[in-house]
Length: 60
Image (cartoon, rainbow, N blue to C red; front, side):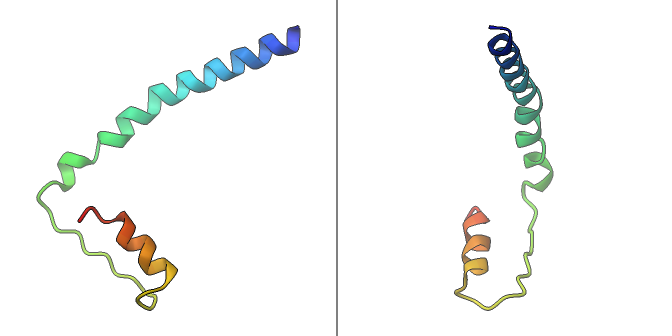
């Protein structure tokens, strides 16, 4: 029973840390880049996997 209690406390601590740090970092950069143009230079050929990943990351 001691191991189960330790795992439960560890899981609770992990969730608490995620709730503490994740929300702030997810929204902290939006006002800085709002209204600005960002240029992404890709060094691979078009149509490949890397090209698709770059296009998927763009909010167009």
